[in-house]
Length: 251
Length: 60
Image (cartoon, rainbow over all chains, first blue to last red; front, side):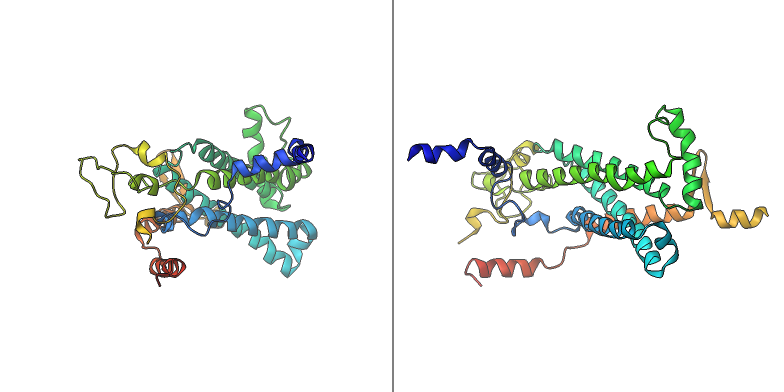
């Protein structure tokens, strides 16, 4: 019956399913093949940042369960408090190296501007989250930092809305509001990376382009190597690379 | 007790308007070294990946 077949497509669940499938086509979630150029350490720091974030969230949940008296007095609390700090240190170090790598790759090429923007805003949001974390330690260090920060924030006119001398407000910003913002941005960033693929190096060879007869900047054909150059950067970046080898390389 | 307070605060490097602790300077230097190493050090497992792919393709 045609009516019965057509009815599900009008439902919001079917439309949402179709939207999700169009956003990231099947096979691009958790792919098991990547372009050859991804075999480089510089591509490791994005997922290292994500791994550190998982430890940050896990240790943070444990600290929230135990509370400040627990993390200041018990050995396990001390350990998880330190784990929370050092996972944040690794998170930021990996994220900064990731940022450097993507900056020098011009990672906004190939319609990846929104990927770059979500990553950059996520970095800024993470700084705010870390700062409110320093204010939530509930020790003399957090008191010192808060009193030093209040004048700076008052001077830019946000002291009435963001009172660093209010530990309860800072704790809520640290464990609810800012993690929510960072979490949404991280998910959006990953979705965009899966949708558009990782940015190729400037001299990468997209398989779809290899099917044609590429020419180098000097006009010579160089299909034999991985470092074939094209006449323009746009020719490389406009192609999404989803397979590791070009079709003609396969038997 | 100025001396103990100064030593507790750590050592700092001054270049005009720039003042940075030696600890932070070392950390920044290590991060730059890691960045350069990530660009230059070969990624391990490349040959293993090729072998796996050849098996997948029925060539291995």
